[in-house]
Image (tube, rainbow, N blue to C red):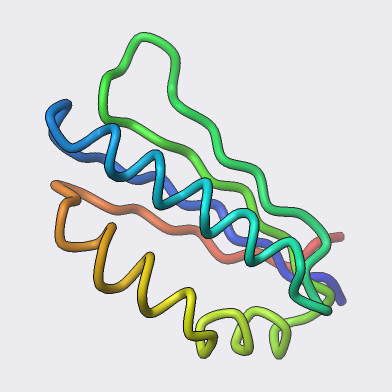
Length: 95
């Protein structure tokens, strides 16, 4: 069963360019992962520093492999997460 992740990231407007650039790099790497079905990055309209990510993987194991990837650690854990003021994540099974 496909597995989806919807993440809402918030950062200070001063950090928006850095977070945006890192998210676009993550998108490039993630779309090349064998279990990735979709990875979309959105900047929330009229809300500086707010991003919405929609990710879909073939299954939960595919998402777990994504989290174990070197680019996830480098770009998400080390670069993006320290700049966030809030982070909300929803995990879902695709019906």
